[in-house]
Length: 351
Ligand SMILES: Cc1cc2nc3c(=O)[nH]c(=O)nc-3n(C[C@H](O)[C@H](O)[C@H](O)COP(=O)(O)O)c2cc1C
View 1: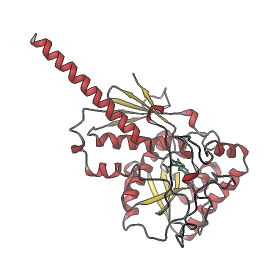
View 2: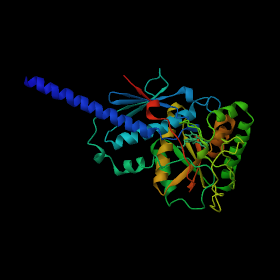
View 3: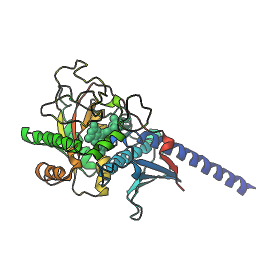
View 4: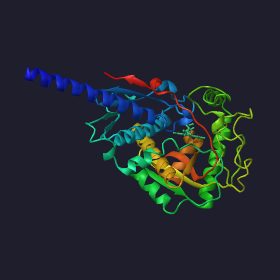
């Protein structure tokens, strides 16, 4: 009888632990959904199993024209993996992550295994909480920045955040290097606009104003005009001449606006694992930038989608390292919106 009571307690405790794990895993996925993704494709699925969460790439959401190798899809998923792990740490777990654990299942991007919570949120570091608090505040900026300096020491800090994930952040200074990157961005935008397949793909991921779709780049998240900066980094043309978008910052009376600080995130090699690591590094630095005085990032990945232009950037401007993201950092005051799919659309039960 004593043994029966013992095993009853054990079973109950097991169930309670499983319930708590399921709730914590759902919480972590619900946070991870807010990672950035190319064209807001949200190309991820999360499988929740017994003390493990798997992250898969959703090949149907890969951009066939702009991203045939899936590089940007994996950067996006890497950003989601970083966010997932951050949320699990906050709930007191010590997650172990294996990237690409099964060569026979390339869509299985990461397996995250978890030990018992180490004592709940009280055990998680203040730093984890600080970064986690930025996940919903971070938002992609599009357009020029306010004429304000970045907080002192921020770039060193961001370089270190990226290095800790195995990448490098090249801050591009000098008139000619910044000018060349801006010109390559404009050239890429022109070349892509010549390609009807590219245009059709952007159309697919840029819903009309008022759309209730929970993915894609909505008109509330970009300015109506591609406001020029000096030098000018072309924005992606999500509106395609239809006048969509929010009033731009200069219309809102912000005065003189600037290009901000230009940077390229690179990796030493250029395979699927590097892309996932680049995504982790990206989200880590974006959350850090947001935490340190609300610094935002604008992305210009068009020239990295054209192999010849990407090669010029690699060989001439990144010391031979592989460029994964081209971005500008700065202070912005515009309030734009973004959307995500609900958790039940991205969670699978994993047995
Ligand atoms: C790999 C990658 C490439 C991106 N490229 C661009 C880009 O070239 N232009 C742009 O405006 N946004 C770009 N973005 C930002 C996404 O459009 C943005 O993350 C998505 O719409 C979700 O919005 P949010 O970041 O505001 O949450 C990129 C994001 C990722 C992860």
